Length: 502
Image (cartoon, rainbow, N blue to C red; front, side, top):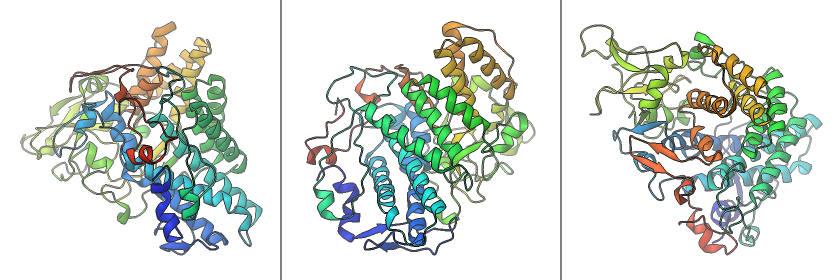
């Protein structure tokens, strides 16, 4: 089998376009599948199909866990506790312990569904111009997001490419036409596009999404503002710094999301929908819970809530390392008696408000009293299914500061950095040159710890991953920086070149 055969064969052989059985956020009847013959010929069918593309973001292999917890485990954010045995190999950066085939497969399933939606727009009966624009804009935003996540994982990032031009260091396959038949699926032998070609396609989709989605339906859906925010991030990875400044400015000027400070910032992490979110993955029903083993909540903390810390059930597999604890002055602190009551324990903290997002947690898994991250704590009202902010508005300030630094606008970069520091309760700094860049990157580290950014920030600067617990010093030119392309794709398609080392 070759590329897409495995990912799309189920669609091809069953003749159905699978959709999510949960359409609670869309005013359509839930259904298990739509017959491929005319599957997308009605507005209800198109809404259901689009809902399926959104639903795939909830996968454990995507935003349900791996794009956050696994990314940070690969980086230098924390260490594993051995409570359940999960994420240990990734945290040790062992060969093959990286993003797995499920991430590739789920993402390309979603991309194929987005392609089928875009291919079918002209056949929808009774659709208004506004509906057609929304379907196209949201499908293109989602396709861009899936492609961006794939290319940043499986390929080098344009700002730091090791041995550029080597045949096995390309981008990822880009296909913009859907498949619904076995003949189509079996006839494809798609090669990896160049990294630049992938980014160009992402740019095109997001520019279209901006044009087509002037307003949004809520942050669980794509919007023009969310497209600008995502484009700001994509441009940062591409090293297109004027574009970063322009799109960050547009996103910040929008009414989508609110930059928070002080206690409001902490409280934002306790809200079902994060007020800073410009786009987030929604877990609307308890049946969508990922469960105790691999959810973000359980990966980060053993606590079930903050009201009663004796109520524990998660694993707390991945917790902050000494460097992150030092960012916020975190140390276990007994605040009452008896010491056996977990509610009589908290942590010391410095003036940085982000320290409020950490506390003592696990005491029942044999790892001792842990300090854990509480960004994901049953915010949706049921355990192990928190809404996941994909883009928070605060990021736009840090993106713009970093871009201005590279554009030699150090004064603007410093002003923005200090304004951001003030939002988090920190004093202003006076820095220039390389020290200014390092401070901006440090703020990114603090801000997005346990949100999955750090691995890619190190990767886009070509930096080694250095850890003391566990002891790791992974050079940028080490093959383990990239994961393997799923072997079944490589085995069946002579045009797919495997990443080096695998």
